[in-house]
Image 1 (cartoon, rainbow, N blue to C red):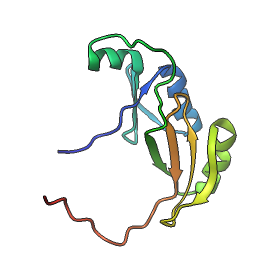
Image 2: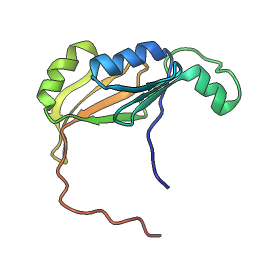
Image 3: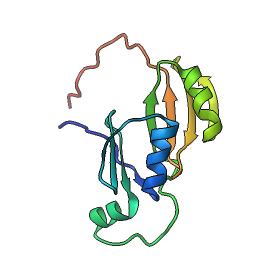
Image 4: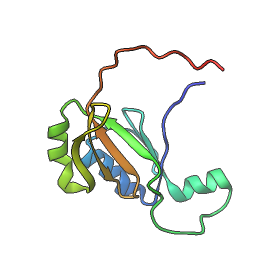
Length: 133
């Protein structure tokens, strides 16, 4: 089985498309109106239409879909420049800080309240072994 990408529900696809393309500078690969695929594999889906598709019913509540329980993780080679470019345009959770594992990251909320993390690339020193039950 191959993992393809996360597909967060968003309340306003136009607002979220603008946010990810303008603030994070992601390039749009496909735009089908209610579904937007970026060139890095990340995608967004209009929440109302995806909710109907997945559950076969309309959503009873309105408002953002983010619940502070999912992190959308991105990397940038120049974390300090990315922070300067993005920080004043988002609802910042925290500035660039070094994590216990040595990586520097910053976090903020997207328009739907999903947590977005931007980290510097990490160099891995070991090869992971496949899961064996």
